[in-house]
Image 1 (cartoon, rainbow, N blue to C red):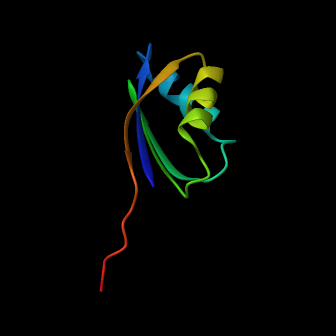
Image 2 (spheres, rainbow, N blue to C red):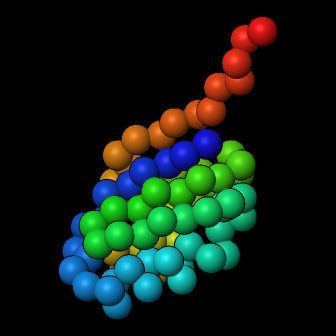
Length: 76
């Protein structure tokens, strides 16, 4: 699964590092890409939007869901 969030209040590389570090303990994250103002997380489904938002809140920012994509298996 891939979840994209808009993160309000981020303005520097320090913010990016703080959010990336805050996401570290969230179970199920496979990869995270953090940019100023946005986060894209690839996960196995155990990481919920609520757990991602809570982790980002620990870093001092508010996150809003932008998109959530579920991988689909091809039909054969």
